[in-house]
Length: 103
Image (tube, rainbow, N blue to C red; front, side):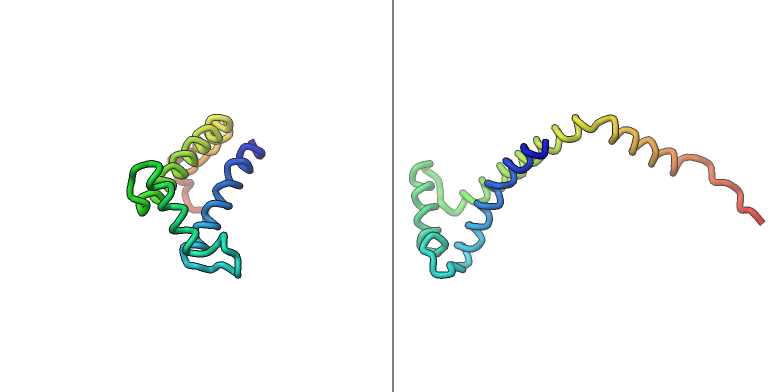
């Protein structure tokens, strides 16, 4: 599961890192991080997909959230016994009658 999380997180970190730096034109002298290339890339994707280039980042964000929810569901399914024990312990903690105060 650790490797799956790493393989899931690495592209997200790379893409959103590039997106954030290029969107705000923090390029450190690299053309790859420039705002001009950012606009060109999204214009190219917009033309290929036939949609407005300004909507592409939101579509990617929605896909990232959906993928994250799928991975969280897989993780929860794999750890369902531990999560169930934790939930039942919390439930017992709050539903047991309180002990009377000692003097």
